[in-house]
Image (cartoon, rainbow, N blue to C red):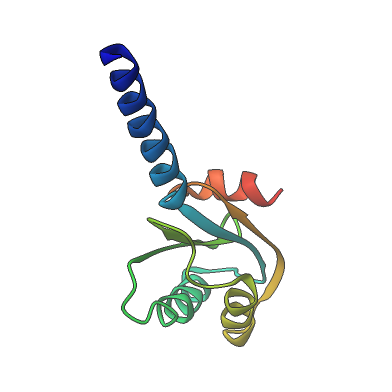
Length: 116
C-alpha cells in the first residue's frame, strides 16, 4: 500500500512537470525579409518590431545579410504572424515567409535555416 502511494505521488509530479514545460515552452516568430540591403534597413525593422512589445519581454533579432527578422518569447508568442508581417511591411520591406518555431532563435543563420 505504501509503495502504491509513492508511485502515485511520483506519477503526479511527472505529469505536472510535463504539463508545466509544455505550457511555458519558448517560441519564436521568424520572418524572411526581402529588401534589406544595409544596416539602416535593419535598424528600421528593429524599431518597428520593438514597437510591438508593449512592455512584454520580447527579444528582437534582425540581420540584413541573412534577410531575417526574429521575435523570441520566453513563453508562448503573444503577437500573431499577421501583426509581425504588417510591422515589417509598414517599415518598407517585403515579408517572403513567416514561421513559428518552438524555441528561442538567437542566431541569424539558425533563423535563415528556419524559413528556408
